[in-house]
Length: 208
Image 1: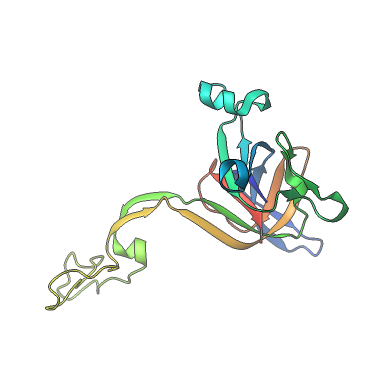
Image 2 (image 1 turned 180 degrees about the horizontal axis):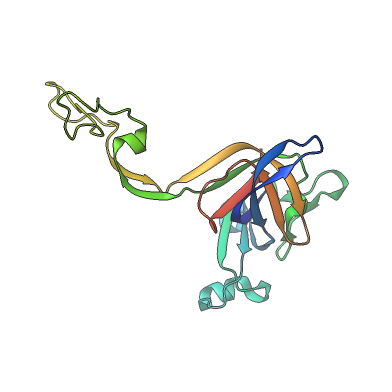
């Protein structure tokens, strides 16, 4: 099971022995289960969530969510496990169920997926980390150029050649992160390290 959240920004926390840890503050949840799909009825098992609030919503979306609310984001998770919680608190999820930061505990190992920052069209030095050519001795305007991109045979550029192009703006999953703090009243989580995207990026947070 995962939780949807919105990136707020970065901060830092201090431990009892004075060590500082960089963290990302995320507004996580709550998400509401809008639909539980089954293989018999829909052809596959999945759970559909609604997150956020949208004042202007189209009629098909409003009819789909009904009285549960006008959601900004709908997400679907294909899964055969339609239960939340652990141990005695484990229960089967149903339409209208609310999932919040309570599914995580401090110290949990998690992974976060989100859209990385888009950096536009970039050269090979920034995009791939090329060192570039020497800056002197006849190398005018050659410092950040890619150099040779081919050979005599097969007379065309080979697929996968590292060249200039659009950078960023792709979905990235960062694994091995850790929950440092949880504020259930404000739906906030402090996650150790950096997560993808700019401020306001939609994130999918799930346990490892």
